[in-house]
Structure formats: C-alpha cells, structure tokens
Amino acid sequence: MKNPITHIREHKKEYAIGVAGVVGGGVAVALLGPKSIQIVDSWNLKFWSPTSNTVVQVLTPPTRRMHPGYLVRCVETNEVAASIRRMASIKDANLSDLNKHLHGFLDNVDGFHYEILGEAGE
Image 1 (tube, one colour):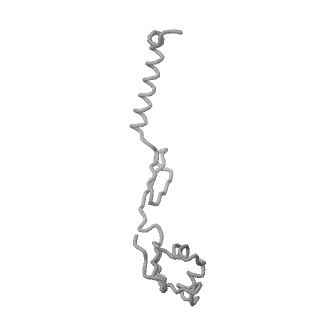
Image 2: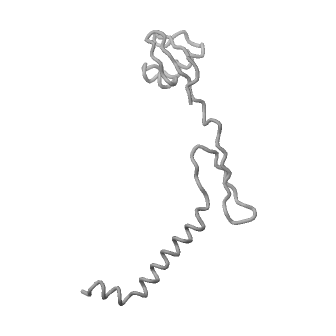
C-alpha cells in the first residue's frame, strides 16, 4: 500500500479540480440562493413569473388562522377548559352532545351543566 502523502502528490491535479468544483458549487448556491422560501403561518401563493423562469411567492400573513375556541366551565364542578373538545375529553362526554348543550339544544350532558365563558385567547 502506498503512503497517503505520496498518493496525494501523484493525484494533486484531480484533488485540485474536486476542491474547485465544491467551492464553485458553494459560491453558486450562496449567490443564487433558493428559488422559493417557505414561511410558516402565512398564505403562500406561488405563480410563474411572466418575465423570468422563476417562481414568485406572495406571502400574506393571515389575521387569524382559525377560531381560537371557547373557554367552557362545568357549573357543578367549576372545572374550566380551553375548548369544547378539551372539556368533552376531561368529562368523558360526547362532543356532539356537549356542543348541542352549549348552543341550547340539550338541557344537560350526563347530568352536568356547562357554560361558555368567552373566546379563548390567542
């Protein structure tokens, strides 16, 4: 087996070309950058630019992603949950029945009464 230093000396031209390619590729990526950028929590509209061969992105942040939910309180136990779904999970109640009760269609859910305290904070 050859000495590694001797091997490098014999093949220095190939190594120089390889290093130049890696450096050149890195410079190209740094200068050109990515064609598109993904930003979380925004509307991401992509379309082809009419004047160039690149993808143009229009990023518009939404005012609110969706309804934050309601704070729900059990009248009998005084438990408070950050959403209707969470209260149904805590009390092991049917989500649909709890929703109907909170909107006035059922008198109680499994003998318990609930009330909406207001919207949960963002």
